[in-house]
Amino acid sequence: MTVDQVVDRASVPAASRETLEDYTLRFAPRTYRRWTPAVVGASALGGIAYMADFSIGAGIGLTHGRLVFVLVNLAIALVLMEADMFSFLNNLLSFYSNCAMAWVVTVAADIAINKYVLKLSPRQPEFRRGMLHAVNPVGVGSFLASSVLSISVYFGLFGAAVQLCSPLVAVGIPVVLAPLPAVLTRGRFYLRRTDDGIAEPVLDADGNPSGTRYECVVCRESYERPDMAASAEGGEICSLCLSTDRDGRHVLPAP
Ligand SMILES: [Zn+2]
Image (cartoon, rainbow, N blue to C red; front, top):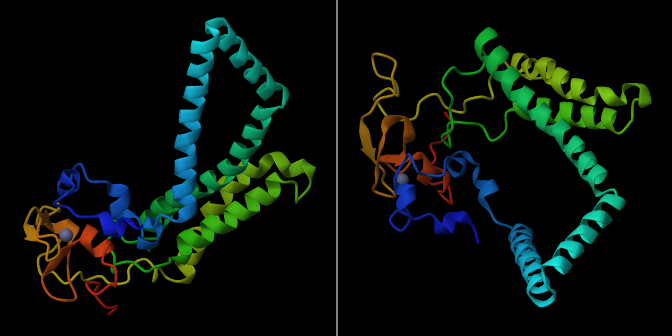
């Protein structure tokens, strides 16, 4: 099942209120919003594991008394420590932190350098579908390159001497690699369109987001100007309906 099928503002009161709406859903690309059988299975297994954990604990406690329950817990804790489960978790988190640092510094370098120093990235953040390219080599390139490099350093590909420096690689490489593709592509892959098809500008004369409300042609709710774009089929459409438009018939064509 996809989230596309369940988004119906009338039946979800929170979704019809902009302040309560799930903005992660709103900004997520359409392909991220598909729940694969593996994701559903993992979520179900997680829930079952919790319930099993509680019911086994309660079963032991109720049947054999609290002392036995405490001793069983201590025994499990001892097994986890003796099996060195904590260093396994430590390794897993250290591995993951390389990717996390590469991602955070890529975003920071894009904002600080590409946006404010080089002025290649648009000043106003854009999120509406159809206004952005599917892939911008700035973020994808910098994140992938610095993640792969820092993980390689972390796993000792460049020798044991520099193995501990993997966080420095994850933090240092994006500072160079985020601006480089932006300069090479001259910032062409940030915006797909600059005009969202609505005559009124997003910002008013004082530079504040315009509060004019437009009615969405799909959900019939009204939203303020920055959340709206023109539909390719006429009228205005809100960014959520635009994101969840399954066959893309409301998405404006590339200029
Ligand atoms: Zn809508």
